[in-house]
Structures are given as structure tokens and as C-alpha cells.
Image (cartoon, rainbow, N blue to C red):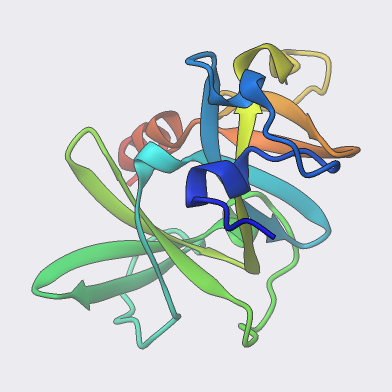
Amino acid sequence: MSTLTADEQLTTGSNGEIDSDLLAEDACQLVSFRLASEEYGVDIMDVQEIILIGHTTEMPGVPTHVRGLVNLRGHVIPIIDLRRKFGLEAAEPTDDSRVIVLNVENRTVGVVVDAVNEVLRAKLSDIEPAPRGALNCDTGFVSGIVNHEGTLLILLNIGELIKMEMASS
């Protein structure tokens, strides 16, 4: 039995053979996570780190989806509850809940998610454009939909989400 490198583990198919299509430059790596019963993903290049939920300092007068601020090794960052931001029912954190610390365009923000699932590779050709207008809602921060092993993964444009957040605060 041979040992696979981390890259090979991410790119092996169900038959155990390396899928050379996923090693090509037309692939991207995504961090997948769960909110309620839905699967989401963000580009791994936007992820600074993933941390446990700790104490947040609440700020008066901020939108309800802003949990507050945390001190992350000397840097104060805002923490956004994605459940609240997306209009989902609020939930108490569990042992699986995490904060994904994102850094886009020199802005750092943490987002609370129900669970982080995995790092996966997707071919760019497998990313469908986000539905615009048909759902009668603002999907400007959704950059696409990925069909990953029979599950639809909603791909978020974190840069756009952060811009929207900064504009509303």
C-alpha cells in the first residue's frame, strides 16, 4: 500500500487513482462548510485560518448578524454569524462550530459556521454560474454552484460579501 501526498489525497477519485484533471490549472481548492442543512464553499486562498469559537466582545448598534469583535493574536477582527446574515434561524454553537478567518483585499473578518467539512478540489468547468434574478433575492455574494459528489455546494464570493458588509456598517 502506497502513501499519498496531501495533493494526491485531494485529487484521487473513488477508484483510488489520481485524477489528472484535478491537478490541472483549471482547478481550484475550496474549503467546504455547513450552515443549517446546506453546504457552502469558499476559495482556500481567502482562508487565513480556522479557529474555535471563543469569547466575542459585543458592540452596540451593529446589525444583529455581527456577533462582535475578537482579539486574534493582537489583531481585532469582526465576527459575522453567517446564519443570521443569510436569514437562517439562529443556533447555539456546538462542538463542530468554527470561525473561518478570511482575509480578502487586506480586510480580515471571521465568519461563524456550523461545521467545516473538508478541503476539496473542483474543476473550474464544474462551477455553474450563480442564478441571477430567478430566485428573487440578492445573490451578489454567490459566485457559483458546484456539484460535488451529488451535493450542490454554494460557492461564496467572500470579497463581495465583505464589501457588502462594510457598506452596511
